[in-house]
Length: 314
Length: 318
Image 1 (cartoon, chains in turn green, brown):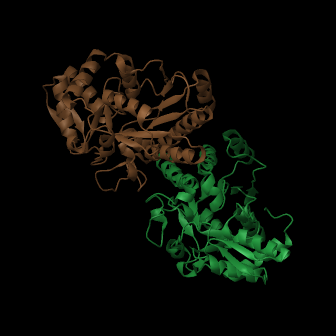
Image 2 (cartoon, chains in turn purple, orange):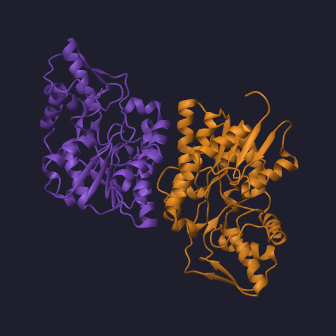
Image 3 (spheres, chains in turn brown, orange):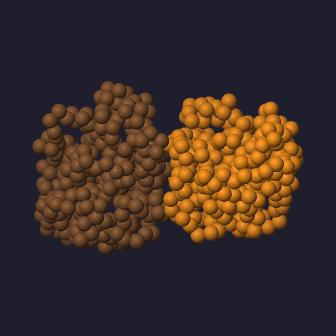
């Protein structure tokens, strides 16, 4: 098996790299981790060149234009177009090069905004996504459309996973554009350094399920090797482990050993109130999979950020 | 926008494009307007470069975007991937290039076949994205839906008021009369022509029970001009006869038989797929804007179309 990982230098890519190195890689497997330096996947030509160079048998497709709530709200057109280009280039080129399996990466934020909870894998297309990131959401949904059409026309069994909120080392800790946990970690670091209060955007009330990147990475390997469906699979802790942003803030404060005040700026948008996802399908396949406890995963992430502040993406 | 309107029509050689060309020639063109009708010979719109070249050449102020990879039920069922990909390329190239060239307005063309399969009836403009489309043509359906996504996000980012229309089943001269790949009415017209010629029965695929609203291409063309000039919303608008004019495929087959003067037997092959049972669309929004618009009566429109096909058999696309 020769596995090409697009978006290899990102949060999830680095986690996969680490678990492969630390014992999850198998005899004879070759793993290649790409970053945007290796190829601009928005270009069909560059994508083809990189497939020609490496001739993978399998692909884990993580590369995307991503961002937190506030960036999405301003640039839906770019999130739509750029991600469609990347996804089409990777999926089409993979097919042309006879790649046996591609595992792409969706997100629970692409599900219908008006929906019942918990959401599950059959519900992805059942209504419009949240207004705040509809460009990104539709682009990701179309990966599933492409997979199904490719299976129908060519018999390819390309599939996708749907993680909930991922966090861990090597995240994008940019306060403006990053996701909620890395943004909080960075802001807490600055608040500590400057002796100021920690300002949290929004009310703290929205609910999220968080998955540690290293847990997600192990599950990605299982999907790559043993999950045979074309329909996507949600990779997440269970509903019982859903946390409020406020809970998450407290864990960051603890992990960073922050002693100052915490202020909630309720003039800032909250985004979707909840996105509770069912991991029943995962549990049907892997009833015994153990997730890293949230506080421990948060501590590891905070420690990593402090130790690697200079090189961290921010 | 200063100066006269220069309108680029993509897919200009197709069913709807030819109808627009005809109504523009026959009196609907306004003083100083310039109309350019493109076909695939002029540019392969799946190529960003060729799209850019043709915009550079003509510098339109307005675009009517009709070009697409289209086909009837059976072709869609075999090639969902191609219908998805090719149409996304065509649409992105036209919409993005239009924006870059400062085009004031683009009117694209969706279809009632892209609506959610499981839905309440009648369907209306607010319901496009409310659930998955019918399995048979999900590739085409999603590609068309994404035109609306592109329009909304382009409006959000740049303030462009690009929009789209949603016709029901269109028919008329210059259609694709290919029996394998065409839509139901031109397919029936061609099959009836052959049945007449060969002295055989007319074989209709499916049960004849599904229901459709049909719109004559010349009526659609007149409405396209109104949308281009006077409809300001980004949200699409359904262009169709009313719900009261919905017909079964059997009704349509009878109108074809009459229009073609066919005297032989008509047989329904129920082993063939029917497609969606109904797609009843509301034209309330259109009627709110144009309460007095008159559609050509179906039998008259069918007769004109049949006569055109018989007179132009050699050059008709089939």
